[in-house]
Length: 98
Image (cartoon, rainbow, N blue to C red; front, side, top):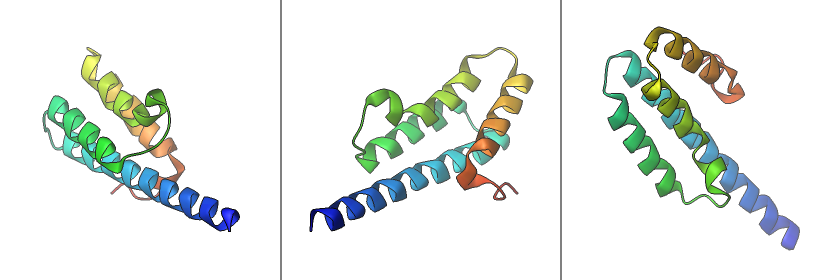
């Protein structure tokens, strides 16, 4: 019975992380349309907090750090290239950029 519970836990956790990746992709699309990056960071953080993930904080907010890097850099063109490549590198999102 414990095995079944751990499988259920892992399934739920993976589903939550997939939802976070989907939200990051939505934030990326909004950023491409010109929305304020600071608003996107706040909304993405709220989304992650709402998922109630277990784990260390540094791992919970890794997707937020991608947006923060874009916000903090002066070279926005280079930062957008890095952000695009990072999102492309997330295997779950491959083939979904349109």
